[in-house]
Image (cartoon, rainbow, N blue to C red; front, side, top):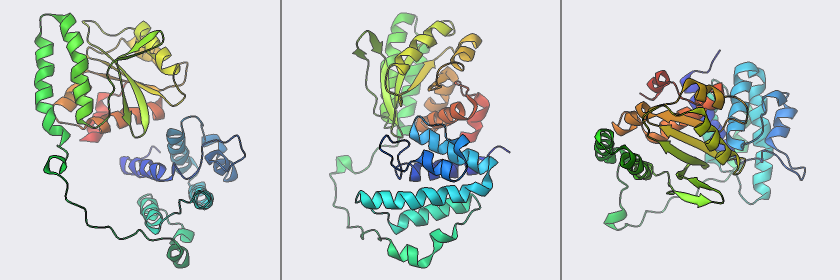
Length: 311
């Protein structure tokens, strides 16, 4: 049975909490997530590659298909992660285990070893927080990203109505740059590497995405997506891609991108963008849902019906 949205969210948070406890792979014989999967009998659920999505998939599939191995898997990761972090001088704090127990509770699990009082008492407690020193008023509070959306929405509509479509296409790039900046995604404007030009890049949850955007009269064709896929594939094994085409994509282009090489590119169209610009959804949450849909179903274009999950 597919995961419910609360279950999916809890597992995502669990993966984010555990992702730095062990390496995904090691050429030096270190204990890894792959080792933990093999030790608990769920090797087939470890896909390898980028560590965070691989760990999320491992936890999801174990929860869905081998629920009897879920707690042993988590306990194995924690046991070896405790040792590894202690060796690195980064001891686990009590609050981290308590947060872990809360996440497991949301999944209707309880691991007695992680509730053991003597174990919890042996862990370091966080130091009391010191009163924050007053900051200059100009840095006191980061503006709500949604407050920037009305102006960006008006700019988008003005570009939509512009008679000079070539200029509108060029002005679309700085609009996207301002949009990603508003949501704190650290965009990098158009830049060149040997033999190619990248429209933009940004960072989400520690993952770097290359960004390409098209605003042309017709739907984006398969050849354009193939070219972008080569740009992404030519970077590191962890680089992802986002392609935004305001007028959408041909069915052939979507189908072609969903086959062949490792799936690392998500697609959004103008309707997705309007949801963000009207304040209906937060851009980071939209991107997370699109990436999750790609990882779960191998479909690069997020169906609009799934946007209901974001409210």
